[in-house]
Image (cartoon, rainbow, N blue to C red):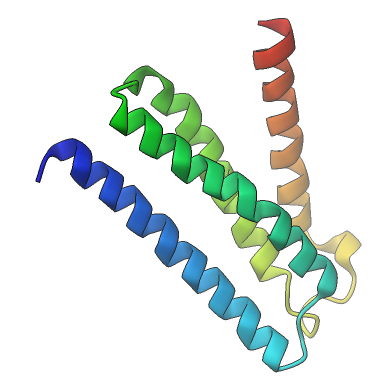
Length: 125
């Protein structure tokens, strides 16, 4: 197996396993009737950014465009952190007051960082 093929396979398996674990966690909460609807909608909104991150890694490895990996890895890791925080807040039994929730503040900070970086990349640069 070539090293590029191994990297593409590894990234794909990594994202599939993480996606499966997130869906399993949300499904358990749904069947226990403890799933927060707002957290579920936020999770649904993170599916595309995570898919896009996986797809971009696939493209960069496949096309040998390695100078963009550091930038994409930053966005991939931060999107995975946001998804983790959203899954952690999905249990209504644990989190009553969302305003005091530390996970949502992490999501807000990362989202703000992404917006500033996108402005810098697409408008100012």
